[in-house]
Each structure stands twice: as C-alpha cells, then as structure tokens.
Length: 196
Image (cartoon, rainbow, N blue to C red; front, side, top):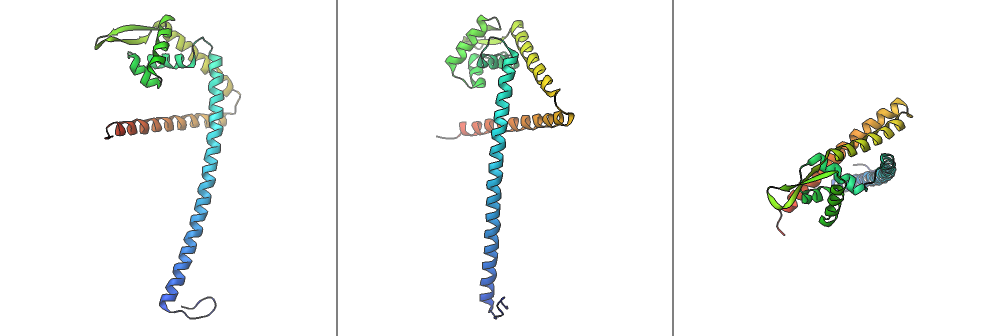
C-alpha cells in the first residue's frame, strides 16, 4: 500500500493505518452523534417545558371557567367515582394516588354535598361502595360543559390549520399518556411479584 506521502507500507502497517482511519472516522461519527443527541435532548427538554407551562395554564384557566366550590382533588375524585362506580374508598385512594385519610375526607365532603352515595359493601361489612348521585352527575356535566365552551371559544380564534394541528396534538398526547400509563402498570405488576 502506498501512503499519501508516497512511501510503501507492508501489509501490517497498511492494516494499522486503515484501522486508525476507521477508528478516527468512527470517533468523529460518534462525536457528531453525541452532539446531535445532546441537541435533540435539549430540544426535547425545551419542548417539554413549553408544553408543561401551556398545559398547566390551560388547566388552571379551565378550572376557573368551570367554577364550583370543589377542590381540584374532590373534583378529580368525583370524576373517577362517576367513571368507575361502584368502588370502595380504598380503590378510589389507589386510583387518585392519595392517602387513605385524604380520600376519606374527600368522600365525606362529597357525601355531605349530596354528590355521591354510600352503600354497604356486600363483600366487606366494614366498607362502603360509593357512586355518584344524580346531583353529582349534573355537577360534573355542568363543569365539563363550561370547560368545553371555554376551549371552543379559544379554538374559534384560530386558523383552521391551527385547530387541525391541535387536534392531532391532542391525539398524540392522549396516546402517549395511555402508553406510559400502560407501561407503568406493567412495571408495577412485574415488581410486585419480584422477590425482595
């Protein structure tokens, strides 16, 4: 093999030179890839930050528009009760990921407000099965209607292409959340059965 300086190299020297060039090329590619990965990570973090801020502001504004005297925790619990009734307070505590004493206070407040009913649990005489009352269903329907009206008013100010983009984004975010929740539940099942 003849080098760029015009000198002849033997097979071993030629292979060494070729290996060095390949290593250098691979190192350059890896460096470019690392730099690209860092840039992609920074871009993902920036996008995540912007989305978090917009979602938080939007959720806050929709809560304000919905009105009502329930706390966000109570409203979320009532929505879960409506969606999954009948269920026990323990099941609701797991769904809402709050402590048992907290969910007991929430359930008591919802019961006192007439938004849920408590029936004895036939499987466990010490517990209750909770479900929404007609007033609870109406309360949620009214809040959802107000939130949807607020979003519709906001979307009406946008161009049709922007509305379509937001519609696609909503589908993408929904699928990502369902996928992540599914993976989390799967991981929890796997670790629950793992020996300690």
